[in-house]
Image 1 (cartoon, rainbow over the protein chains, first blue to last red):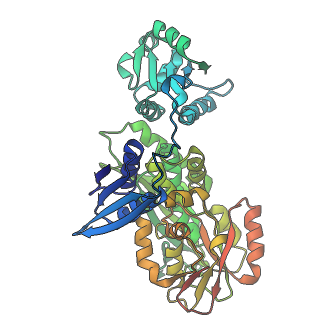
Image 2: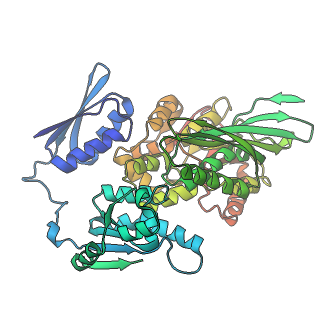
Image 3: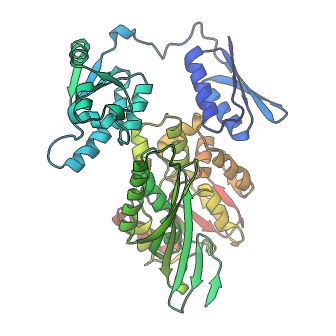
Length: 200
Length: 306
C-alpha cells in the first residue's frame, strides 16, 4: 500500500505533520510526499528516516517528490502502538465548580486553575469528560482565558459539559462558546459511568 | 554630535558622556499564551540594548491586531506581559501605536543610554578571548514542535521561561570584565551570529560542540524533521565559513543554526578573566552560562566546530 500526499504550498512543520498523520493512520509500507521547498524536503526526509523508511528524493521542476519505503521487512506491522480496546480504557471525569483553584488568594487561584486546565491534556486519552458548574461555567464563555484550551481538548475528543442552570443563573447562556449545555441528570449519569471523578 | 553605525542597534552620540541606543523588534506569536508572548516579545526587543552594553530607559509598544477575529482580552494580556518585563527592566513605557492587521504582532521600540566610549559591538574579537553563551539553544526547533502540537508541556514551559528572561543580569555582570565584543543570539542562529562576528575580524573561532548548552528535546525534534525553514536558510548562507568535524552530528548542527527568539548573549572576553566572568554570571543566577569556544588567530574568518 502506498500513500501519497501533496504538501505543496505548505510551510514547516505542516508537511512533516501531515506525513506523520498519514503514517499513524494508514501505516503504509511506502509513501510519496510532494513538497515545493528545500526545508520541507529535508524535514520530511529526516522524519521518514527517523521512522525507519528508506528515502529517495526526485526533483521534478520546482517540486520534490520524496519517496519512502519501509525498511526491515519484518512480517506484519510492528506493534509499538498496541491499542487497548476502548472499553478497557479508564474514564476520568473532571468536575470544575469554580473559576479559582484552592483558597486564599483569588488572583493566584484563577492562574492556578488556568494552568490546571492547560495541563489536563497530560492525562491523555483517559480524560473523558469535563463538567463545569457554578462559577466554573465562566471558564467556558466568550473572552475566557481558558477558552482556547477547552476548545483544544474538545477537538481531541474530550466531552465538555456546561451546566445550563448555572449559565442561566449568571445570564450567560448566549455567551457559552465551548461544549454542550447539560443538566443534572447528565451530570449524575456521567459520575456513575466514570471510573474516577476529580472534583475541583 | 557624531553619528555611529553599530550593529545590534543604532547608536547616536549626544554628548561626550552620553549616547543613545535605539532599536526596534516585533514578531508574530511564538507561544500560545498571550501573557507569555508579551513578555517574550519585550525581552527580545530589550535584548539589543543589553547586547551593546547599554541600559534601556524608555519604550513604545508596537501592535498589529486582528480586531475582527480576536477578543480584545488577548491583546490586554499581551500588553500586560510586555509591561511586566519593562517594569523588571526599569523601563518606562512612553507610548505606542496599534494598527489592524490580519496577523497578530507585538514588539517594542526601545531607547537606552550608554557611555559613548563603552559601546560594545560584535566586531572586536581578539585572539585569546574565550566565548561565553548565556542561554541554551534550540528555541526555534522547539517552537516548531509547539506549532505542530508535538512538544511536551515540560519543554514548552522551560523554553517559554528562558525566552522571557531578560539579558539584563548578564549585561550588568559583564560591565566589570574586559569584554571585547558581544551580541545577542537571535534569528541568524548561533553560528550565523558568530559568522557576523568573525568575518573581517582577522581571527578565527573554535567551538567545542559538546560544551554548547542546548535543549536536549531540540535535538530529538530536529531528528524528527521539525527544523524551521530559517535554520536551513541560515545554514545555506553561512555554510562556507563553517568547518564541522565529522563527529558533530547533523542534529547538533541544526541546533547551532537554529534561529533563536530572545536568545542569550554571546560574550567574547579576555581569556584570562573568562572563568571569573563565568563564576560571576552563575552567582547572578544565569546557570546556563557556559564557555563554548575560543577566538584563535588562524584560520582567519572561519569557524571550526569540533
